[in-house]
Structure formats: C-alpha cells, structure tokens
Amino acid sequence: MIMDNEYSRSERAAHTVKKKRLRKRGLIPLIILLLLAGGALYIYFSYQSGLDIAKGNGVEQRAHEFNGVDDKDGKKNILLLGADREVDGSQRTDVIMIAQYDYMQKDMKLVSLMRDIYVDIPGYQSYKINSVYSLGGVELLRQTISQNFDIEVEEYAVVDYAAFESVVDVINKDGIPIDVEKDMSAKIDTELEKGPQRLGGSDLLAYARFRHDAEGDFGRVRRQQQVIDAVKSEAVSIGNIFKLPKIAGTGMGHVNTSMSDGEMYRMMASFLVRGDKNIDTLTLPMEDTYQFMDTPHAGNVIDLDFEANNQELHDFLEGKPEEQ
Figure 1 (cartoon, helix red, strand yellow):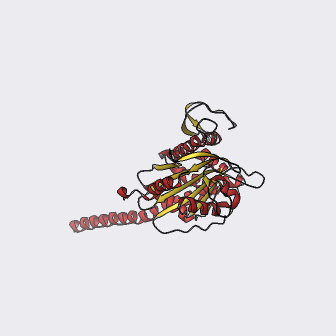
Figure 2 (cartoon, rainbow, N blue to C red; figure 1 turned 90 degrees about the horizontal axis):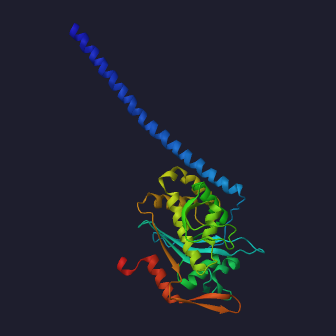
Figure 3 (tube, rainbow, N blue to C red; figure 1 turned 180 degrees about the vertical axis):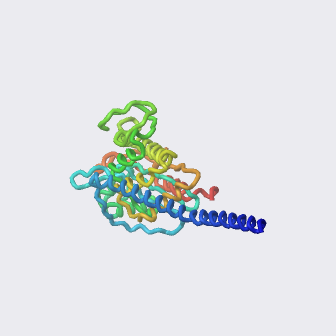
C-alpha cells in the first residue's frame, strides 16, 4: 500500500512537471508574436516620426509626369536628382545621377553625370543637361538621357536639399565623419578646415557642393560621391541599426519619387541584408573623352564623345562581356 502511494505521488509529480513544460511551450509562440508586434509598431512609429520631420520643414509631396517603364530584368535604374533652389519659378538640378540596384546580384551602382554636359534635348535647342529639368521636369530629362546615352531609367527620385541636412542630423547629431581635403569657404556660406572631422548636415552639404577651385564641377562630383558613401556607411553602422526606420522616414518625407513605399522597402531590405554594402561609382565624362566648348547660347559646355562614354556606361551598368 505504501509503495502504491509513493508511485502515485511520483506519477502526479511527473504529470505536474509535464504540464508546466507544456505551458512554457505554449507561451513561446505568444512571446514571439508579441516581439514581432512590438517590432512592427516600433518601425511604424519611428518611420512616422521621420515623416513628421519633413512635414515640419514644410515639404510638399507632389507627383511628376514620368513615363518610365520597368523592363523586369531584375535591375532597377533610378534617376536621382538634387534640386537646386527655385529662382523666378524655375529650378535646376545641381545633382544628376543614375542609380542602379541589381536584385539578383545585390549590387548598387551610381553614375554621376556632369551638369555642364552638352546634350540634344527633345523639342528644344541643345543645352546643358542641368537645364533640362527646368524645361520639362523629370519626364523630359528621362527622354534626354534615353536619346543621348541610350539608357532607360525606370523610376525617379527628386531630393530636396533640406532632406539631406535632416537625414544627416537624424543619423548622427554629432555629424558624419569626413576627410575634408582642403580649407574651403568660397561661396558656401561656411568655413571648412582641412582634415578628418565630423560635419553636420548643412556643413556636409556645403562640402559636397563646393566647386570654386581648379577642379570645378569635376571635384564637386567626386565629393558628392564621397559624401554619399560616408553617409551610407554611418547609416548602416551597428550603432544606427535601430534608427534606420526614422532615417528612412525622414528621407522619404523629403523625396518626390515614382517608387511606391513597398518597392522602397524591398530595395532597402535587400541592400541592408547583403554582406557587401559597397557602392560602385562612375563619373561621366571619362578622362580624355571630352573637350570644353564655348557656345553663344549656353556659354562654356562639356562637349562629349558620346560613343566612348556610352560604351563605358553600358559596360558599367550591364557588366563587361568577360564579367558576365
């Protein structure tokens, strides 16, 4: 009888332990669900707080006429424009770039087009490429790039300069690490000293836009690419992982783009999860493929050898035959 009681007690104890284990196992999915819900809410509200920063700056979202077509080749060509301040109702593009993201190879590439390149403009007299946006917006610029460079852009993003400053300040209020190559002050409303340092949004933008030296616009384009790489590196650093939704919201709130939020999320997620986050860059024109030319209506322009530059552009974006 005593043995039966002892057996019953041990059986009850084992049954109790089993029930506790089952309860714990039942809690695991609930805990995971709560963590996922909490993470989703954090991302949402962080992203919204970034959008609020743009609203606070008085940014107006507006759609542009644009007839780019996705060719479904797994690559996305995006026309990136940095819009200069509006003067007398017209606005020129201080920055003209073509970004390409390859979803299959997980590669990001960036092509900078010098703003003084002399181009044929559909329906207009030939002029500098940075004037095209003021004549007919992103759609005319898309047509101009297609006609002169034989490249089709599928999306566009027009970036307000306030976006750049705001994003930099959200990424790190102490600024972005940059090695300033020389003392700079001419026509940039600030004074920059040579050497490695951290620059806040307005000073970093001034550094990227500086062009009053012997290099002119060529130096400015090089610095623009340097700054983009520095901002990207700081944004994806471990210390900023939890800031990424707010950074994205701040940037998107200042950007007029043809891309949907879903497409933007997909591209950012694909880029962020890959191992190598380097961005390959190219600047056109290439060395020894252009000359400066004076024109009566457009002033001093860059006269391009389009055949040589277009070949290099296509090789860069599509991959040289030996690389495929």
